[in-house]
Length: 502
Length: 62
Image 1 (cartoon, one colour):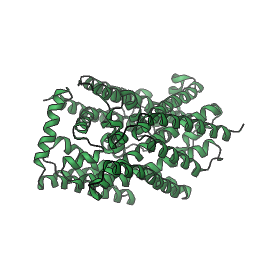
Image 2 (cartoon, helix red, strand yellow):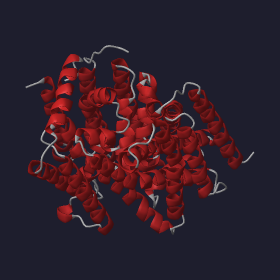
Image 3 (tube, rainbow over the protein chains, first blue to last red):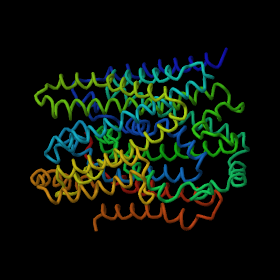
């Protein structure tokens, strides 16, 4: 039987298992908005850890990070581990999000901001920021799936079909039982991601003679890739900070991730979620980077670094079956990120835009219905966006994917000062939060589109500096919601002391 | 300083090391035992310190 047949067969098995898990999750689905979008804040530690991992780590890891390592060397490891180190901040933010989420019943991080700043405009601003930057980010994931399926099937699966499969899975898994089906399928997908990637790395390292021989060959063949800056000039400090800064704050800047901080059912589940993610992240990062380094040795001279993973999978040392399973693992990484984005954006639209601005008197059932309709609508927008990008000439595609991803992470970074202020600064104000978000995002977009980098600093770096200055300056010049700030931060101070969180 | 304050200081120190060591100390070490090993050890240190902080958390289970 042909490779294309086995690719289709693998996809079919993957969809059937995912669908089965989602339908099982539906049997535990209760009623209400909190149930649909947050699993009634009662998700266990194991599933919380895996859904957090699967949502965070997308197709970028085994394709983008491997390609970045292939092209630029060890700095890619530092960049990704800096992100993981940023998770240290979870020791400050996880208990805070979790405690106020339970006390005030927040559904989305934007609702938290609206309430804390006593201004629905703050939540709406952050919501629009998320909609603007997360839809292209989701589209990039779809594109990744499309090209991967096309490559592994030898071109028999059209790119558009791959994108379509990913969209349908993401809609199904986020619609069937909301957070419960997303979390359960994420847990399954996280296991697929890590097991398949570890297996294929093991095969490649064994073919290279084991880790000792692999590292020796790497030092001999490409010593310039093992330092920063590299011999080729990559990874200046400006580049490192420009790429790492947006990802350092990923856990609070990306709402599909920060919303997960509301879901653990207990303190024990919180600990398991955080510990599990840190271990998962370290292993998955090392696998992805070593995968990129093994491509340096086995498939040198590629013109496009993003082809490192497909080229490695096409080598005769990788059995076809394993290549297909790895393709499914990468597909799982992409879909588990997209369905979480869809679910979060739908909750943000329903709670922060529809209920917050358009129809404040909407019933809970009406709000839920709006959210459920938004899931396919957002998916279709991302699909159209991905379709349009896929239709561009090849060069155009390369020119668009990287800037889109970079702009998305840098744009979302602009909500970070407002989030810090909500938890730590009583003097923070709604105008400060809104002005800093809007001005920072506009600046990031302008710098990203024009390619202008004053003093060599990246758009995210400039955007963040301007955003912080504006947030502090405008807050000091305007009136804070003192009563709410005292109550909110005062409650946290007591609760954190009680739980030994501080 | 509170325990939380010390945790912020430790986090800032880790971030300073993240740039200082690879770019200023190990920049000429073109081996696996250079920046590659440093970043792995550094990440493990960050993870262990996070575990030290969050394992102290306690709370009333639902």
